[in-house]
View: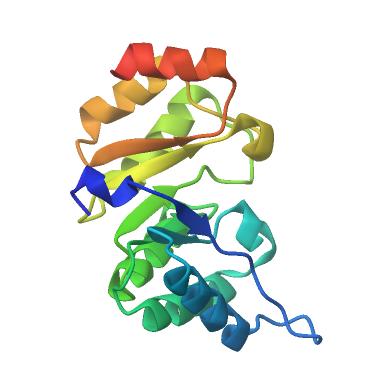
Length: 183
């Protein structure tokens, strides 16, 4: 994932599909991928907030990535949101995603604990620098409870040249600050 072109067009964030017994429905997930492909999506994303990522165990997230990757078979750009409360957990999911065809990785902040900006930056830096591919970070303070400033992102970019994008779900004022600080 070194091409910024990966992010062009409409990328559908897949919903988590569950069976009546409240388990992931992998058949329904595969149908959802096929639906996106047959209806002209430019890419697919899994394990975002719409995919109920905060409600899934690590093993469920990995199984879902496997199903989507095997169904997609490289037909569309495939991005995976990487969540986890430790560097090791995020790297485990990231490497599993790469092995299952992910073209893009979007790093989320850990959900546990209260972190100041330096700890937050250190976390992202440790994950990004350990990965053999380009990454994006998700910056969504209203949904995730924390975010990086434009200056924080610029600092992170200096130490992580593989950080190529920000999935920003923020106010226009904060987004303007990110653009001003990072170009």
